[in-house]
Length: 432
Image (tube, rainbow, N blue to C red):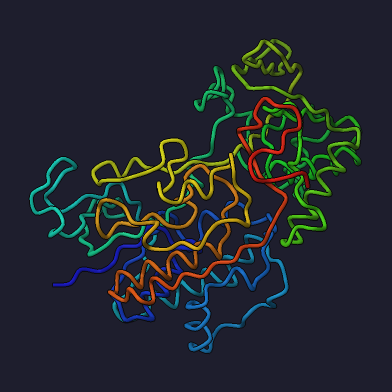
């Protein structure tokens, strides 16, 4: 009996993998922990994407939706919010795939373990001849599914990086969690905005998400001038964080950088540099004090917004054999191309099943999870990944090897090489 391909996650990349499997007539099951397709996307439904619709619909998924005749394709040139992406594309695609012969999409199905059937991590004998055993917790309790292959597209959303500089929560971070928000709050929602209006807000993070928060808080400060923001930066300056501006081929990302730069210099925002949070202390007056590892302090803080990125959940993969970069937790072969020390978003080389293969044959980490802790993943990268991976699983190595990926250039890059150096470019990226 041929077991189905098990796809973990009904997000953009997991559903794209299922669409490619459906086109090839392969049996598959998509396991989604949430109650709907794109459940994680729904948690940032208010955020507008950098990419236009033309870059947010997988080609195989588009072909299936068009052939079904029940889908109205969005304007390719428009930029959707996360909510629009989910309701206009992800849920209709999931509904269609769930009715495909040999395919199903299951909700409320949280994967808690992946192994070789009858083989734990240390057993070599007969390992490759056994199917995968996928342990799932759902409404009916625990069950064990067998799969011919596993495509892990579970993403990183459930694992936000903490405020603490050591990679663990800062002292007092957990105890004061009611005053700390992880990710991008919907600052256009009056109820949410009222939480921050007239308050002292500390924002930790340097990337696009942090910049979006700065823009929203600056807008609140214009309506309520008592609002003030401390922007916590681990580096000596914001440097080239604002990106390529008009030269950014993702126009919306360029516009965000320009708006964030204006917000950061507009008076409501104070940059606090070389700040690496060691502790969060609740004071007797009801405010928080944030202390850096070097003793620097930001006092009188009412609210903290942490937008420091995400990391993959590898816990349920403890019984399969992985080869991951020790720093990023990304596929090792891919890591050198995406490491923020020396990476521009547009210089990722074409990659597919070969680069994503793990020592456990038939197991692939794809999508945002394939990048580990590295930022700047784009949906079209994931679409090309799963096209190649599914072709390889179908035995079509010629198609799997035809990997073609061209990403838009940007002035955004990290560069831990510039961690302590003032205004250093950081790897391959020059000044924007």
